[in-house]
Amino acid sequence: MKYTEMNKQQLKDELNALKEKYDSFLNMHLKLDMSRGKPGSDQLDISNDLLTMVTPGNTKTENGVECRNYGGIDGIPEMKKIFAQLFDCPADNIIIGENSSLHMMFDIIAQAMSHGLDGETPWVLQDKVKFLCPSPGYDRHFGVTEYFGIENILVPMTPTGPDMDMVEELVKDPCVKGIWCVPKYSNPDGITYSDETVRRFAALKPAANDFRIMWDNAYAVHDLYEDQKDNLLPLYPECVKNGTEKMVLMFMSTSKITHPGSGVCALCASSHNIDLMKYRISFQTIGPDKVNQLRHVRFLQSFSHIEEIMKQHAAILRPKFKCVLDTFEKELSPCGAGHWTNPNGGYFISYYAPDGCAKRIVELCKNAGLVTTPAGSAYPYGNDPHDSHIRVAPTYPSLHELQTAVELFTVCARIAYIEKIMA
Ligand SMILES: Cc1ncc(COP(=O)(O)O)c(C=O)c1O
Image 1 (cartoon, rainbow, N blue to C red):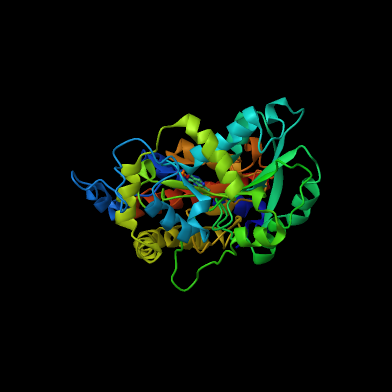
Image 2 (image 1 turned 120 degrees about the horizontal axis):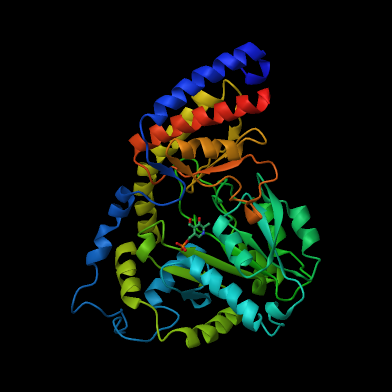
């Protein structure tokens, strides 16, 4: 029965029963974590062969470059070729970075702040700089721009991507310098931008010449199901059609393909932008970790082999997503406590509590030993206007731990909902 259909006494009885359940979780002295989108150790094991792919006497690229030495600031050709397949772009338009695409994004914003982009005034010298943040979105993206004192502007997400009417309107302001995007299996909603959304991005006419779309395709190959895969229209060719390719900077990494702590990332951009980035990088480093690139090339081999690796990840992740979704359905649907996403890929499920309940749920979870992402963290400045959203990250705990964590979560969600109705 829906809680909104219960009378006061029924709600009181239900709350008492839930509190008893909650107490039994308290007595378990749990230490559970559903907060971050980290692969589990069994997922890391899929790529263990990486660790033996480069051995003494076996450290050169196909064209004889010694990977143990300095040099090759934009990456080895074989690694670019693999990312070219992933980005669907020419290898010449790619720079290979170290293990973190977030680091690359941070560097670009830092460069824009201190030196400006493409001859424009450095952002730090401009009166006001604003960035668009489709929300709920990736907290660490918003953290980068917040760190630099850039004003983060909330743009609501829709089932087809960011609200493009609003984006088109906001970019008329010359202070708006960019937008954070996770176009496929978005963090946290698992939404893939529609073809129309991609085309509207490619056709954007921002007032600022130094406006950049930060296109973070972190979950490009992270399908959960063989028969239900989202397709993302490639942005770059659409930009070329519109003559807007300088507006887009695209990122990817192997963090959730191989090992996040020792993977490889890449930037894909127009030739002009690539030249500008290479110039900056030439002051930053004498060369990246090419040994790591070489072992990734040997382990990943090709796009089709990456697809095989991703099937192994999906086999581990599917039961975890199912565990969350089945438990939500069983425990939360009958009483009408919120709604949630059911993505075809990526790393997250978004739970939307009835308005005003998210912080309380997180508090109840925390007091019983379950860490979740803080309520509101998927919004600029951690401020969810509805206090509704909680990002659920099912990948890291074992299936057994996850089952306990989700059961506890649903008890907390129901308690918070009844408390709200009775307040
Ligand atoms: C959308 C998105 N981008 C980037 C990252 C981090 O990527 P990297 O490990 O390449 O820095 C994550 C990690 O959760 C993510 O969800």
